[in-house]
Image (cartoon, rainbow, N blue to C red; front, side):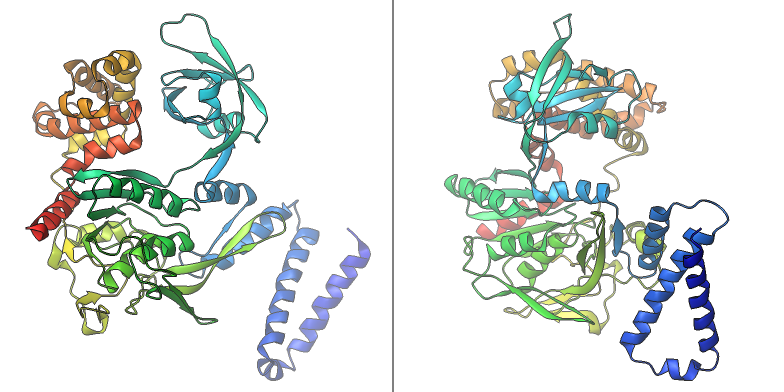
Length: 534
């Protein structure tokens, strides 16, 4: 060890220690800035001491990361540290693109099965087809070698303009096929579905709020208006949030210029208001927003603005309650701290954030606790004190604070929809595996039989062959077969299989077109809009 450094370290330690005893009272009166400097120096000294004096070798990078994590752990549930790799992976879905080969895929057994090549993407241009199995990348086998999905994706992805050779097995062709794919920017979509769900009623589902969400949304709205949309169901169920700017843009499409969407405020962050910048493009039609216990953050901002401004009604269950504002602080090695600096408030003044004073464990168990307390199944399970009652800004309707957005019309979680046998099938992904096998064997035949999705939706019925395969896959997964429960769940099982087949043959939009017909919250929204028309 450097002797000069050791002497300095011990000299500083002894000096600070010697001064600390007689001057405790004076130090307590020091300015906050000086106190802060002392604490920073204290942290530096601790790190110096450990890395230079500790009995064993230490990983300095890991030591610093753990120190940062330890500090953030004592704050709120959403302040967090991410290393450089995590930052890159976390940002890709929101930034709207990544660089790669452009395929939708699923891992089946230990093989990467292409569900769909992205339209006009690198793989489609190279000749990769839906149903192909990618078994090697640049002559390195990825199938049959127990390689994890993250490692497979690392090999397939790469910078724009670089080349990758993919080895493919294709049904009906004995020999392995090879394709050289030139990687490119691949768009990531946050809009899952947009279609006319009933005459005059459009439906849009947003999976998250990213850089391209507003552009995707406005294009979808334009197409739906051309098809005669008068009213809209905006589905934010399961939407975990994303960019604040995207939420403000989406909410602004429904409001007048200058109307408040959300404001933020914190101990050291003065109030900042976000308003609609110009008159929204959809001001006259009725809007119903769908939410559930997994709708969070940006999804809650949009919902709260529409509800508080009396622009539409909310259907579903109380949203997650994530209303803390994180500011990203970039660190020199491309890692990042996301530090909570303020809270989100709806236009009526409701704080979106649910309480977290009982610790992170209770906070993370909140959804489970809601189920156990009956909140997800009974509308009257929550009693609100007067202090949590607020009034909407135009009609003066009563809405509630206390964390999350309370719907205007409650739709209970249907706990009877999945019996234990069906729940096991669902949780272990048996539906997906069975439908993938079926589509792989019958893709050409199905597409020849049904000229388009509309015909498929009307006429296709799940064949016995597929149901037998489902039972076989369940047996492989060691799920005990129960004939009574199977028969009870059969309509729902068949519906999900049909939806998955539609997804694999067309897009995720078609999956929701089928599955939505049995979704209670969507049926409720359609009923409300239909009754209002009458």
